Length: 198
Image 1 (cartoon, rainbow, N blue to C red):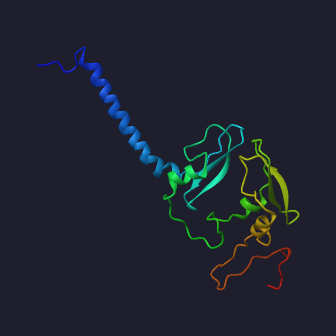
Image 2 (image 1 turned 90 degrees about the horizontal axis):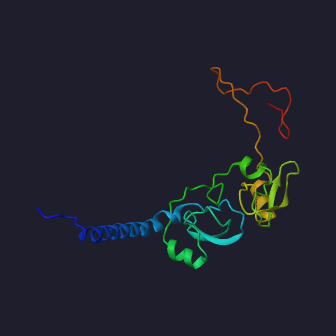
Image 3 (image 1 turned 120 degrees about the vertical axis):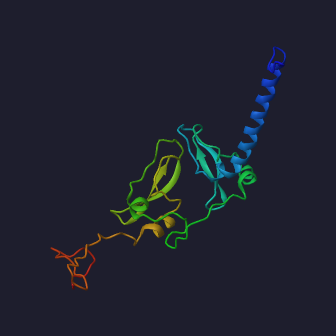
């Protein structure tokens, strides 16, 4: 029986096998770039640099600029808008239809309007606006570029349109106890801005 891997053949066979495996992995990575990397959210990273980069928002179907911290990001991170479009232009994900929020996020008043302004640990200096529930108005603050929250708006107008007049009042439990229509529980005092003619 002939020897399959002799002293002369083994290194050549191993090199051939390694190159085939490497080529296959690169081809798979190329496909994964389009299908996976364009659909992941941007990652600012843990470092504190302030590098302007581009990421592909598959929900919106567009490349958007963000501030990258310099390390710990992902592959949805491009130096130019053109490079971003070249890699991801045709990648989209189906959007949920949400009539209350044109951005596609589900509107949560507490997240978008009652959270305190967060500058974050990064060292960029972006002028932003947040909604102050005590003043029922929007105030400006400086955003560092990472680890903020959703109470963070590019303009006072965007902040006001999102939060003013959308305060939530407590939901009162209805008592049914076999009666129809249900009755409201006894309230010791009227809630602000509500009529007590119940």
